[in-house]
Every structure is written in C-alpha cells, then in structure tokens.
Amino acid sequence: CLMSGCMRTRNYELAWAAYELMRAKHVEPDGMSLSTLLPGVLAAQQWERVLELAKVAISTGKSIVPPEMLKSALSQIQAASRDDLADQLRELMASAGVATTTRGGRRASDRVPRAARDRAFVVGGPAV
Image (cartoon, rainbow, N blue to C red; front, side, top):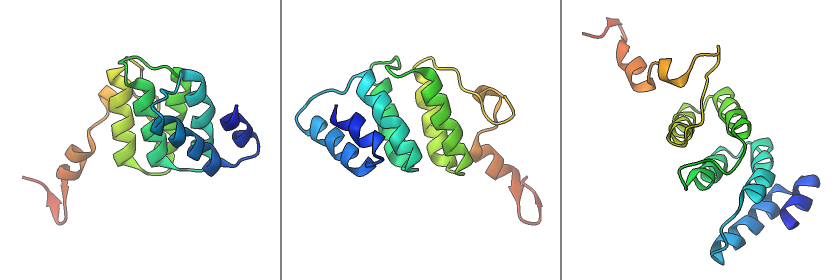
C-alpha cells in the first residue's frame, strides 16, 4: 500500500496526500489504513491530523483502530500540552466506549474539566 511505504520511509506528507486523495474520491478508509497512518501523524506531531483520523476511526460509534492506539495518541497529545485537543479526543474515545486514563492512571471521568480548573483560580485569590 502506498501509505505503508510512505510510513516506512517517513514520508508523512505523501502518506497524508494519499489519504486525502482517498477521501476526495469518496473511498472510506478502513481500520488498516487508519492504523497505518496514525503512527506517522503522531511521529510528525501533527496533532490536528491525529484528531481528524480519530474522528474517522470512531465515526461509526465504535473504534475501527485498536484502543491502545487511541490511548497512545491521547498520551502523546497530553505530553505536548495540547489540552484542547486532548479533551476532544477523550470525548471521542468515551463516545465509542474506549476507556481513557490520564497521567497518573486516573480515569478521564475523575479528571476536573479544564474550564472548571481555570475558574477555580483567579489572580489575587480564589474565585467567589
């Protein structure tokens, strides 16, 4: 497969172009093509593309890529401090029944939402 060859040679942009061509021709990617492409966009730290692939992978309400791959993507996005994208990916995973954990092993449901964290602290003292 073209995308697989591109991944082996780390030609991530060409692999993405092949994916976009598939989509433009109304060819729905299967789990194998998404599982091939996802590690490449993760390696290239193209976080928005990771989220796009996750949306496609979960579009049926169930993930067509291995859950471990989505968990790895979530972990890497969190490590990159992209909380906005991490929150979106976490919600997608939850909607597909994929268990999520955050750093420290806490489940996403135990995590204080970012908006609530931000409201909890105000310069000069606690929020009222």
